[in-house]
Image (cartoon, rainbow, N blue to C red; front, top):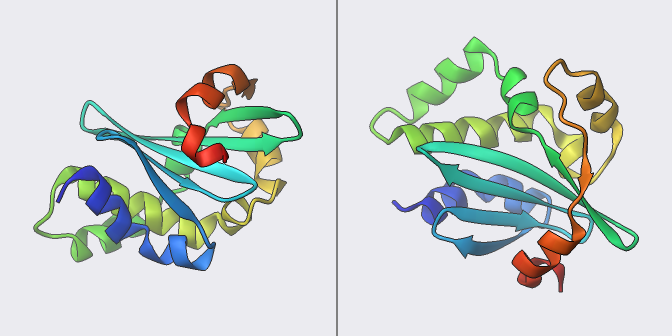
Length: 145
């Protein structure tokens, strides 16, 4: 399976549950989006990076939440996912684990809520959010319609 097919397969429940849409930005970037926010999943050097973009009044704010979400993954989560994804690639394993973690532990984030942001700001590897409107408007036209 290619990156897009893996995302569709592993995020199927999240896409349906949270009424999300999917856009393929490139062969290495898939965006899941709602009217409040979008998640960018980027394949980079055989690893999946996760970015959260919040649509605010007239700006788009970026949160780099890769480490934050990864920190919430337990050994039990890893084992459960490994048992389910025995014969697949490391990329599929990473995406499956990310999907499972988001679905089981981050419903506030997936609903477009903001309670998770205060937890993120207390996280030891917190990266301050930034206004990326100019960059995002050019790159994610389909998502922002």
